[in-house]
Image 1 (cartoon, one colour):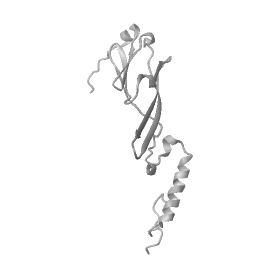
Image 2 (cartoon, one colour):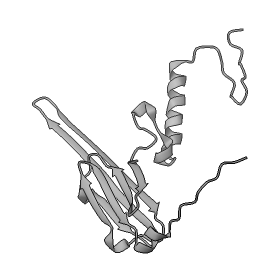
Image 3 (tube, one colour):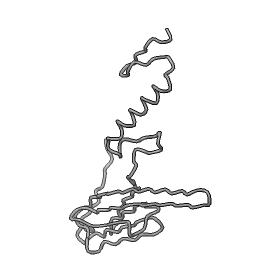
Image 4 (cartoon, helix red, strand yellow):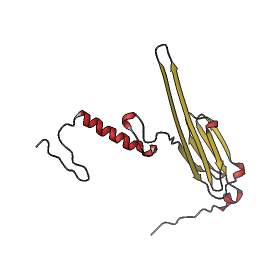
Length: 167
């Protein structure tokens, strides 16, 4: 009874016997090579310490609105202004960046070197009525702050609508 395969819904047959170490190694190597040809952003190899987002940086963004402007802030720790490209298109704010880290340690008995790279590209739609000639950006302590001022027409177009209680 121990070696009878057990079938579960939507799963392959699983043997209750202990798998031989070489079979385990073979299976894991096959999984590794199959994943090698997948998109690195979706493959992920936890055995090697590589996450599903290797090579990609995913900064946190916050978008808000005031009476006079739209505000965008992005957390970009470990990056410098020179690593960031910012542009305003017809109807979008385009933010690109690349994070590079290199660490090297030399001691008498060993040499340690580690490099990591990541990139991101984010397009944030902006409404008509932003005065693109007055957009300003500031980078301070790993936080990029962008101010997209509204033109006068957009500031006055908003109309408050009163809400009456329902029956």
